Length: 362
Ligand code: PMV
Image 1 (cartoon, rainbow, N blue to C red):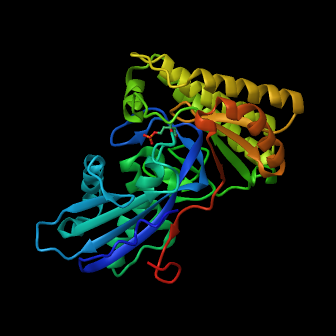
Image 2 (image 1 turned 180 degrees about the vertical axis):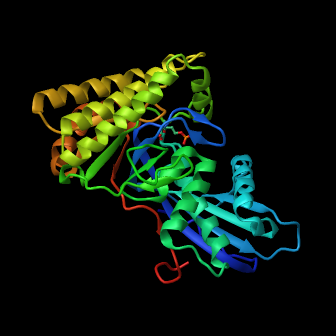
């Protein structure tokens, strides 16, 4: 990652927090919400290792009215101001003392800005972790780890629902379910579960079909679920699929894993296509890649499957043990359908990292 944080600070820094947090890919999709960013069904995702956002929040001395400044990849960036302003208003409800502080927020991604992969999960979770660290450091009863991450997850959720799951590594779930103790609509929890070794090192090759910005935002998509004719059945199915996936995770049933993951991916996009107004995010090359993945699986019997986010890019999920075979498949057959032959090689990650003066030179 280029170091965008080396510019000389002229202000007096009162406090500093510095976190890197990952993007995640949902296996059980969150699509539809109610109230203040609460999910209509539980979701489950895998945190990634390489697609991350690093955010630094500085509390600076200022004689002016408390305010924030935001820099993205080294430049003052005002297009995100509205989102950050809203996020900070939510943060002030959690931590009222923050209101009197002037904040300088600097952020950068490991993946290109217009790579076609959503950055809201990594961006909002890294910002939430920084804010929680800054707000809590002063208090004498510094939150213990589990509580700290729960609070960060709750705050991240208010910025972007899927960001609530990015404060953990491995697999995490968000949304109330009778299947998991401590599950909540308000925050995500780490999936503390005996997962069969066949799923222990999953890779995610993100095949970039298009890096164009989406014509419809996730927020608009979630809203369309409010009057969606299939909403009730969809929310029921998500619970059922979560149950099937958890069982497959325990037993090592890869066929069942594939069935659920692909059902969720195609289900998500069929909800979009049956919304009113309808919208289509997949492209012809998305379908071409999906069909080739299915054919290759039929031919070889290997454990690989696809999933989709709210966009045209295909996430190819497979265990590390068949990496070379999948690399061959991608290079020989799938790259031709990717924009500029672009693929982001990622894998399951261990979650956010906090930088301190001990582990990084700033
Ligand atoms: O977090 P949002 O509001 O960008 O919505 C994310 C929706 C999906 O990525 C399609 C599914 C999910 O659970 O991450």
